Length: 146
Image 1 (cartoon, rainbow, N blue to C red):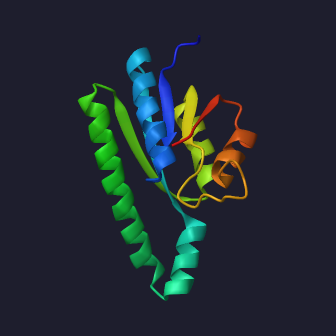
Image 2: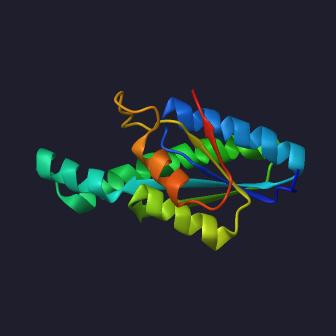
């Protein structure tokens, strides 16, 4: 098996993404790899929430970033307790596009992500973001169920 140096773990707080993070910690610990935790504020969700709630976009963005920061702090703390090197990233945009950009930018060896995110649809076996990453990626992608 090829040596893993960097593993990208996109997280959104869903059960599947938290399980993907746990598996990433196991793999990173076994291979001495770095975990790159990524939280993406979905720009389409942000726009829809602003439209439906009447709240201003900057306020909603702040709230979503704050939620993401708390999640990243918790998960990076877990990594540090296990002795795993960790880097955190937060971006706003289209999740699958940001995931692919960050995978390329960090030159990761593996992407580990949840089967379905917080907006999981029962009509498909995979979440739409996961499905698009699988279609776009030339890298290995490990898909984790909760």
